[in-house]
Picture (cartoon, helix red, strand yellow):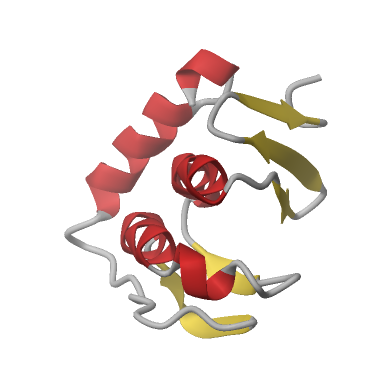
Length: 111
């Protein structure tokens, strides 16, 4: 994340400071719509996304609601883009990211 100008280390440090005290939702099976009252854990969600990438690549859109530290999910999506050989478009609130085969990240957040 830092390589692409995103505040990765700051977010990771904040995540680790509250990880033991705060409860995060784990997503085991990713579907088209993923909604939780408890924030999703970005690390567990990212690992599960990578594990399921061949099954979920057929979905044109996947929605997550209530995601803790969503910027920490980006490296997993970037790696997934490389694995399946397709670009992945990500929207976090009004910020947009285009993940390009784990080689580059284009974003309106960076400008």
